[in-house]
Image (cartoon, rainbow, N blue to C red; front, side, top):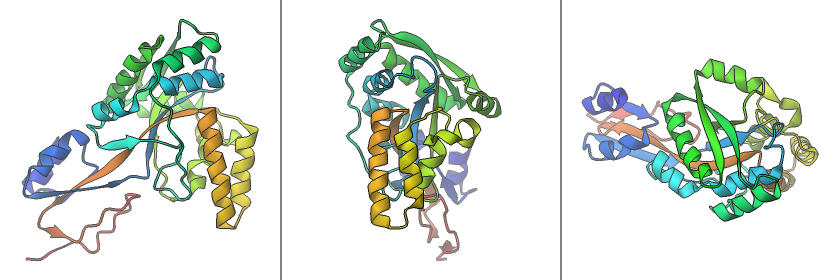
Length: 279
């Protein structure tokens, strides 16, 4: 709210990452120009795959089927986003979208029954900050519809990281932005089995095929072959579901209308050298 007031008053000239609930307000202000673009970030919740019941892929798939991602985007992001179709951001090189898990509560219940949880189960999700707490409440309500009771615990960021790195969590809600635009930055750190915990793989996910594809892609110098490896990797990750990708958010920026030359950068590496006033 303070940042919105500052750009409307002219005390600030650029407001990066306009909250979605403030976009329409700034669009209605003739003194502010709102720019929107696709982000390289993917927002998701992940499961600790070494803890039951999330060590069962059927349970992880059930979680994905239980979430109405379109409704989630409307409520949490005021519609400013799109359903994520990969664990790799759609603006990252060699992104290959999969058919996202559809919203299918009956399919979720069926998978839970097959996994030995016909009545669902209880679990917890760790978050930080007000926005993610509200986001978790949406997930909590949707998962309750298939019998999964979720307890939400909100932490200060440092304490949360310590908890995640130690593997004490069951689920966590977060986003990942890959400013290198190379798919290795969206896969090695997050899914390679040698990176459990603080290194980045906080889903504590291990899969021999995923490891093989990640390392093969790192060694491959021919881009067409790398593309095929990352395509297959994204398919395998989709099927294994250590994450439930939720959405790709729009990048929103507010700029004072009299400031010229600003260009939105997908990786938030904005170059300001061309910004100028005509008068």
